[in-house]
Length: 96
Image (cartoon, rainbow, N blue to C red; front, top):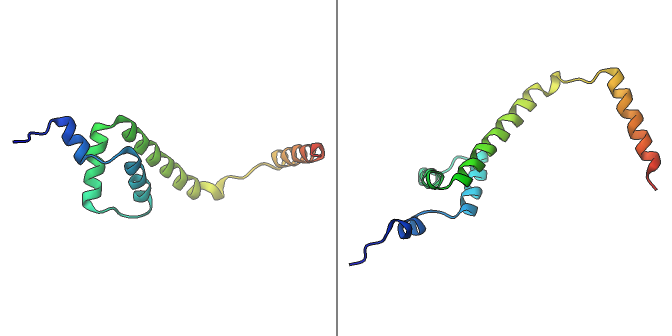
């Protein structure tokens, strides 16, 4: 009788990292099926790299949402705006 080891079971059951990355990215836009979420949790339990990737992706999404919310409150001062415009003119003059 065939008795698979833990390593063999892991290879059979666990998705590859690139598949997890695709799923995690897809999860940002749509809701995944329950079995997909379970597969991701199993993979994250065993793979620290993908777990860190997921945390970073979640953080980026939260930051992007916050930037969107507060974007209208961010204004440059007139002095800063003029300084940036002058620098841009300087760089445009340098271009051949």
